Image (cartoon, rainbow, N blue to C red):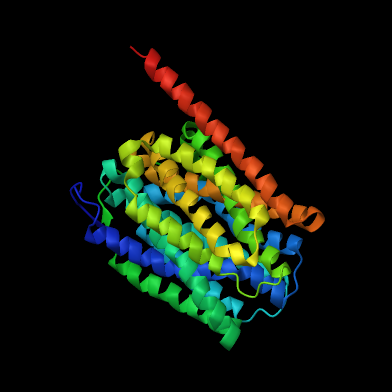
Length: 397
C-alpha cells in the first residue's frame, strides 16, 4: 500500500514502528540460524570447511540477486518484498525440521535462507530510510539495526536452551512461528509516496545498479571488508570455543547485542551530529582491534569480546550506510541500500568460504588475524576517499 505523506520532522512515526516490528519478527527467525555452526558441529560432526561452505551460501545468494532486488524495490515497492521474505523464512524454518544429516538438502535450504533474508532486510531497511527525515538518516538506520541486532542475541538465547531441552526441531518451529508473525505484521506497513524509477527488465536493472555502485565504490569496498570480519567472527567463534570445552555459545551474542543496541539507541544520532565519515573511520579502526583480539577468545571471555565487537559494529554500520546515502538520489535509494547490503554479504560469504579452509589447516586464531588484516584495507580505502573528497571540495571555487 502506498500512501502520500509529508516529510516527517520526527523519526518516531507509526509507519516507522510498523516496519521495525515486521522486521524484528522476521529477524528472530533468521537469527535462530546464527546457531547453525553449533548445530552442524555437534549434531552432524561437520568440519570447519563444511561449516564455512554451508554458512557461505545465503550470502552468496544475496550478492547474486542484488541487481534484481534493488530494481524491484525502486520500480515496484518495498512492502511486497518484505512479505515475500517473511513467507520464505517460514518455509525455510519448517523445512529444517526434516533435516537429519549433512546432505544436498542443507545447501538447498541455505539458498532459500539467502533469498528470504535479502528480500526481508532490503525491503525493510529501505523503507526505514523512506520514513526518516534526511537529517536523521544515520539515526534511523541505527535504530533499525538495533532492533535487528536485539534478535541476534534474543533468538539464540531462546533457541539454544529450547534445543537443549526439547530438541532442535522445537527451536526451528519457533523460528517458523516468528516468520509467520512477520508476514501478518507486514499488512500494517505503509509506503510513503515517492518518485518511481522508469524502466524494467533485467538489463535495465543491472545497468542502473552498476551506475549507482560505481559512485559508491569506496563505501562498497569498506562494507565488503566489514562483512568479511563479521562473517569470520560470527561463524568461527562457535567451533573455536566448543573445541575449548564450551557448552553454551550464545553469551557472545548477548554481549554483542547489548553493546550494539546501546550505541545505536543511546548515541544513534552521533554520526548525524559530528560527521558520518569521522564516526565510521574511528569505529572501523576499533573493528580491526577487536577482530584481532578474538585470537585470545576463551569461554570466559565470550561476553566481553561480544560487547567490544557490538560497540564497534553499532557505530560503524549506520554511519557508513548514511554516508553512502548522502551521494545517492532518493529515487535510487532501494538500489543503494541493496548494494550496501550486498557488499556486506559479499564480504561475509567470501570470508566464511575461504576462512573455513584456513581454520581447518592453520587453526581458528589465524582466521581472526587474516580477517583483521582484510579490515585494515577497508579502513585505508575509507580514509583515502575522505582525503580525496576534502581536496576536491577545497579546490572547487
